[in-house]
Image (cartoon, rainbow, N blue to C red):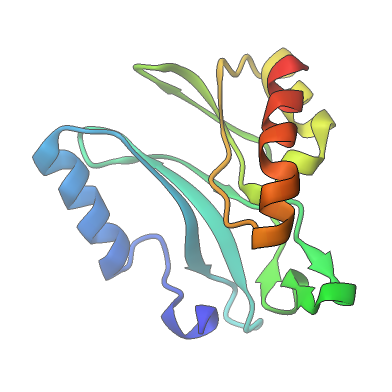
Length: 147
């Protein structure tokens, strides 16, 4: 279904979010946006988009670490392409380090965002499976905060 609903960042769904941010004068963190991939590949990008209060995209991060766990039947790389770049964005709340879900299992990513790129706030929208979420979510968040 993700491939079917995927859109480019200038598509109608994102346009609605940009209008909402501008009309309400708020910043939006839109994690898990299904961004259409290249024309020659049916896979998508799992993208985290930061929108400012003027309705402008100030950052977009394509998830680097895809969740491939065939032993539980989840292989994200079958439907998604990995991103390649670390992303930070300046905001009224400070410099944002922009990530997605499974990335949180890779501490070096957050160390680079913090110590090399000056991130002050780490964003990690997630959709964990129920079992792993209950077992790991808070622990991983605490670990990244401690580091």
